[in-house]
Amino acid sequence: MKVLVTGTAGFIGFHLAQALLSRGDEVIGVDNVNDYYDVSLKEARLEILNAFPGFTEVRIGLEDRPALNQAFSEHKPRRVVNLAAQAGVRYSLTNPHAYIDSNLAGFCNILEACRHHSVEHLVYASSSSVYGANTSMPFSVHDNVDHPVSLYAASKKANELMAHTYSHLYGLATTGLRFFTVYGPWGRPDMALFLFTKSILEGRPIDVFNYGKHQRDFTYIDDIVEGVMRTLDHVARPNEAWSGERPDPGTSRAPYRIYNIGAHQPVELMRFIEVLEDCLGKKAEKNFLPMQKGDVPATYADVDDLMRDVGYSPKTPIETGIAKFVAWYRDYYHVT
Image 1 (tube, rainbow, N blue to C red):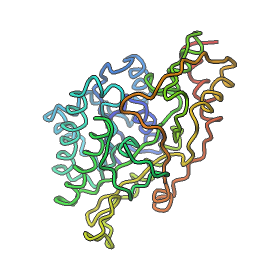
Image 2: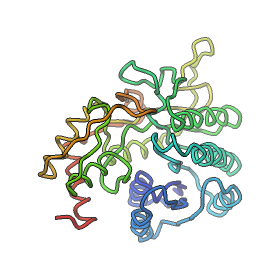
Image 3: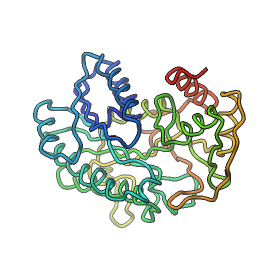
């Protein structure tokens, strides 16, 4: 089928587009290739995608409503995966307007385009950050998430609310995926694994926030992509048992679903660093720091709903995933 994927120059979008193309789908790849991080890495991803005959690159931003509508009119996608967004909790502390422009105005444009061009299913990226001040573990999509602790998290919660409105008003099937700390080859340079690897290999200290007491549900990219594809193929439907007297946040009487997508296996940050040191054959010099504003001490995904509904089954332990990232990093940056 023809799938429009936003964020195809990005980490997850690149891997998803590859997987869709490899199974025979056509992919319309939308990305503005901004300079939030190294543009050359984004261009290298796009170079790989453009080698597929079924890939069409459309270089626009989600904020450009006329251009986005033109892309939908011209290519007529059957389904849409929206992964383009301004990412990063820490960046949102100093650049809040970037999140309003991309994550709110841009997402509204996606919803409107899907509505007016008869898209049968919109899958979009939410984030584990929406759990904010919640401390009950594991995080469940059936829990209330009304206490975000960063603007990034608030923008992702807003996306879920906006999607529900369109599902309710217009019958647009929408599925939100709350991603939990995705890592792997071709990953983002602003993420911990990339930063740690670069610093350790260059002999520089790494910043270890919350004095290394963080726990994260690190999820390997291949497991994420499998879950996104399974979800894309499973069009959201109404929950006929939904009750306004006891409203379930994860479902609706409208064709709307929210899922966690993670490894269901939280790992302490110090253990994550230890595995990375083993893969690099080099110890890290650690600069222990307090927890940053907007951050949370732990994440842990309850993925029972996704496993039940689409057969999602994460398989990659951090020992395997980190080793694959290190192999990619050494090859890409020619590091011996």
